[in-house]
Length: 285
Image (cartoon, rainbow, N blue to C red; front, side, top):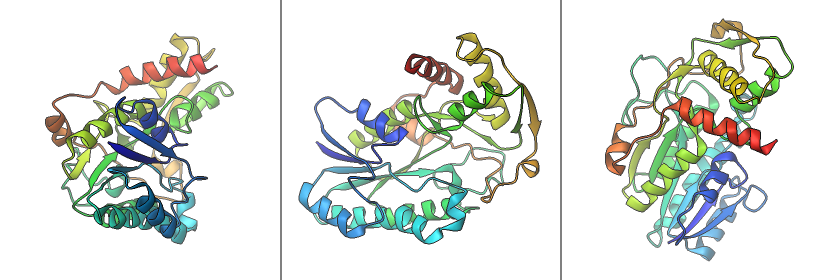
């Protein structure tokens, strides 16, 4: 199999390359090597390389900044999957489009199934939903949430940096979701690619928590392995006390039953994966 992975410079793209099947030809492309805002470049690339699959892990992911530049966000998050899907269809290739829990509005208290109604609250969420539509029914679409990995730009590393400097932290406690460790997502993506069954799927680490609960776990586990010297006092605050340009869903846990049934496996508990990531982070220095 020949596979192109976009977003190779990001934490999920890097995890995909690090966990790629040994017998597949996998080419990772960074933003410098392929501008996802350039549909002509995308078309030319697919025609020249003729991959069996394109895993589009690249995206415009600056959720708050997206509110101020919707045209660029739309070009990347909707235009790129549209261009990939069209070019791949010409010879039977398939797109694996990575999407997000932000396509939902959070107005529920039970995990979202893949066919649940979407109602994005932000420009980012809307463009990712439009990107799903642009990918079309012949593609594999995988939604995931709260992505993190050692060495990447994510909530865990932000918390570690703040914990090293502050004695108190205020963290939102009324947004509930499921952390997802990038290497675990990558494993699911490769298994879905191998299964090659189009449709919408969900991936998350087992369990759910709030951002406040996530932060408390980060502090506790980081202290345990000596990654930080002290755990700051964690104050739980409502979303209204931490306003952001983009609105977030209050509850965005994804139901991954369809994915796990197809693949015949389970994900590990989010706390187990967090511990592994923190050990990797410590090893990075």
